[in-house]
Image (cartoon, rainbow, N blue to C red; front, side):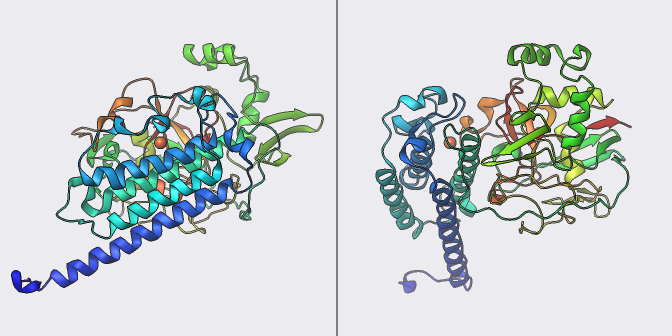
Length: 449
Ligand SMILES: [Fe+2]
């Protein structure tokens, strides 16, 4: 009872704050699961168990892995520190690479949903006594819950990549939100100039940001120009029609080797018909829309286009400064439009549009510099390899980010239409191999000033 210790005046308040945070976390967990299960409702057992592409897991594996990850971090880990590698065998990504996951003995949907619900029950029970202030570092500010939530959000996007590659009947979304029409941008110029100077990049946030986004640090940038909008289908088609895929001088050595091996001559999911090019998103095939950002291109294609245009890809520091730096306040914004969280009017995120939107469709999706659409629609390739920021500290484990540092991966920024809003911000860093095209990925260009 309170008689046992002298309760400071703030105790009641602290408890109420913790309770409010618990309620928020529980609601976010429920919402995340609701979305995951909604995405898979149109699928039958064959769709769920099939390996639709060597690059992607069977969707049933993603579902089991989402639950196993949650169990690992939100029940077992909170009862005593464990190692990342202690994930149960079937759903341990390091034990089973994606290309073999189609041969694993995965459960049926009913059983999987039951397991997911059981784990969630234990998680909510544990949440009721979680101490967000005095508990272990992972619990502070409820970070571990945000980590698990973002993991589920990210797997939802992975599932959508799989569904775009689906064999058999194309995926028919359970609902499809109408996307706004494109509008002319307020600036008439194609590029804007960043004056250069000292900017703050990254974050010190401990409530949701990943270790690789920390610490906040100052970088000095030379002046540069950057595209106001992501490269559109029209722009990319011009590159193709100018022989972009055949002109050796536009490609890096590595890019040319990829091109010779892949033998492609258009972005993934484009088809040439008698009437011109069409694109496909899930079950929707339509004539190429010149106003939408080009999607499903790899880093090498982005780089070749940039060379064709007399430009280059931005570094991730340039990208982040262009997306967030506000010279008027001398501070970075959390999102291009400001610090307020995403709403459906602000940017094309959150999956249910099931497509990119034409450039200009979200007039408020502008950074202080005047760059449009830096959050949403397509992930944007940058010129940068993935490295730790100065003063980087792995948290909670090396496997989170540090194991991927080096020259093998290129950083992508900004999220796509298939990204859940809780999984993206201007400091968020995604990374992948430069040859990957199953990602909802596009790009914009920059050049030296
Ligand atoms: Fe995962």
